[in-house]
Image (cartoon, rainbow, N blue to C red; front, side, top):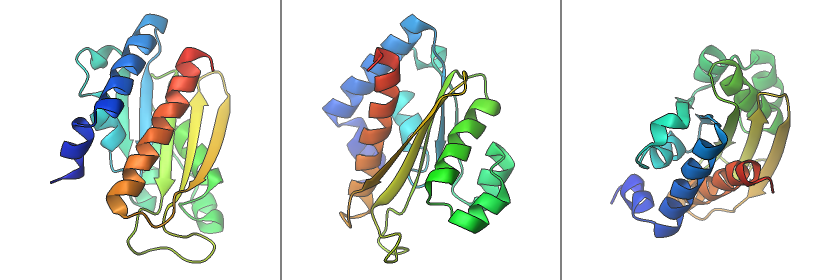
Amino acid sequence: MPISDTLFNDDNLVRRAHALIATCAGLGLRIATAESCTGGLLAGLLTEVPGSSSVVDRGFVTYSNEAKQDMLGVDPDLLSLYGAVSAPVARAMAEGAIAHSRAELSVSITGIAGPGGGRAEKPVGLVHFARAERNGQTQLEERRFGDLGRAAVRRAALDVALGLLEARATGR
């Protein structure tokens, strides 16, 4: 079964997506997503909610370094210096999503879902997140989920990204 089918049948994720969309709609907040290892799953989850078009401005799936540069304006030097899976690149992705959208709030996700691609300093399950706001505030978060399997890492990443958006929307 594709992960998207599993996610859209996950009552907790769907309930949270509905609540987030309702809260953001009430506050007049628009959201943009900038996703790498989740491949657009967060935008897909949010747009499963009826009425989400009043909140979700756009989603950027920037799986390659070139896409991060072309679509979000990520500096190639950041990618060379820190790698795609890093706090500086997560920040640049979230801030780039704000700069290239009409959203007031964005979240970025970049990580190593596995099963391969990890190394000692950047193991499978390492995911960096950033939440940016049009007013210039950006919050970073790093999680090391471990080698849970590709679908489980991506699911865990969605949980964290939703939490970052919820925290801003509810003032937590």
